[in-house]
Image 1 (cartoon, rainbow, N blue to C red):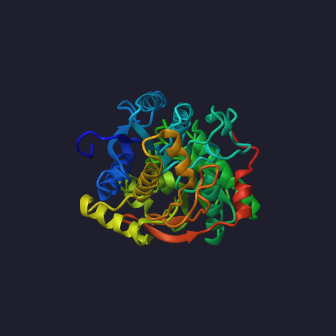
Image 2: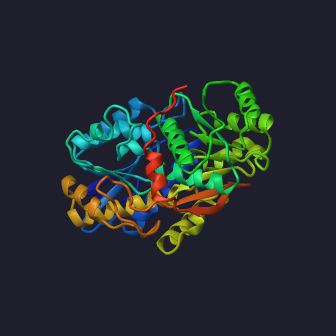
Image 3: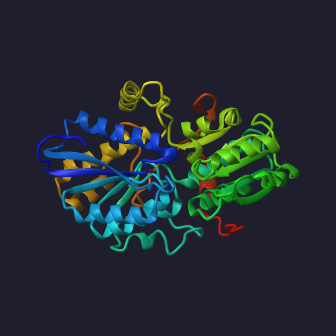
Amino acid sequence: MGGEGTPQGLIVSDLPMRGDSAERSRQQVDAIRLELEQNDWKAGSTTVAFQACDDSIEKTSLWDPATCRTNAHAFADDPKVLGVIGTYNSGCAAEEIPILNKADLVMISPGNTAVCLTEPSPLCESGQPDSLYPTGKRTYARVVPNDAFQGAALAEFAKSEGSKQPFVLYAQDDPTSLGQAANFRAAAEDIGLRLAGYASWDPDAKSYASLFKKVAASPADAVILAGLIEENGAQIIQDKAKAVGSNAKVPLIAFDGFAQQATIDDTGADSKGMFASLPGRAPEKLTGDGATLVSDLEGEIGDQPVEQFAPPAGEAAAVLTDAIAAAGPHRPGIVKAVFATKGGGIIGAYRLEPSGDPDVGPITVLKAGSSFTPFREIRPDPQVVTAARADASPSTH
């Protein structure tokens, strides 16, 4: 999609276009397209086209490891592909990064948050992050802060809201969700909170009544959710409300996988007053080019609220086109230019670290009503961020 004539290069996105994240992904695609249209489908002297790809499958409506690998091989094998914008899910990124790395093809993510994609931690599996980069060279970057920042910010937020004993829940058999839960736990313990409990939920379960009986019987004064709305998150929220009470009574605080309109649409009144984090700034708080992009998106999507990860997708497109403009249609040069580019025209000023992470990590806490709206922006204490990354004893139950 996008562009006319015969382009010199192709930019692709790879996002889950089905399920609860479909609207989020569609808006990310729209943001990428709007950024390319603004530049008249050129990156410097290089004419580019854009193709939106899907890493989810019909059976589950979720991202699929085999599909992620197949897509990555297709991108790597097509010499016209100059860069990949994606993925949204960190697990999919872990499948794609090594394949793209061998092809010297850059990927810039507007949504991945797992620490181990870029930074070492005792939580990392299979030698990550080094094992993701078989050439020894970094070819992956993201424009949003990682889960160490989110874990630290949510722990600080929970404490500021009066919580002393939060109960942490994470999606079973999902390394990203487990990582988020462990990041929160380490940060919470570092600032003096004492967990009331730490447990997983089975995304295939029909009910979580027994799980929330344990929560209700504990001294929990807040419930922390690490996972995705697609992982039966609506049932979790509804069963929490039945067993533990409203979010005004026992606050529900979730990681970014819940920070989308689908959460509210799927749960109704049970989500009212819950909090969810966003890595970076909320669309409503952006200025300059960011505010322009949000306005343009609003003109296209009508009554739908602008999804939280749409502006970062536009930022990823801007970073990639700037890099292509600097290097021309040459993959190795584009990789080098991405890491040298100072971004921030859309989402606020930052620079990319050699790891591929942005050097600043503001986290926005959103509150649910008829939509999610900004409640507080937090810049977590760097020492708490370090503590969040260093949890060496992740629970597996």
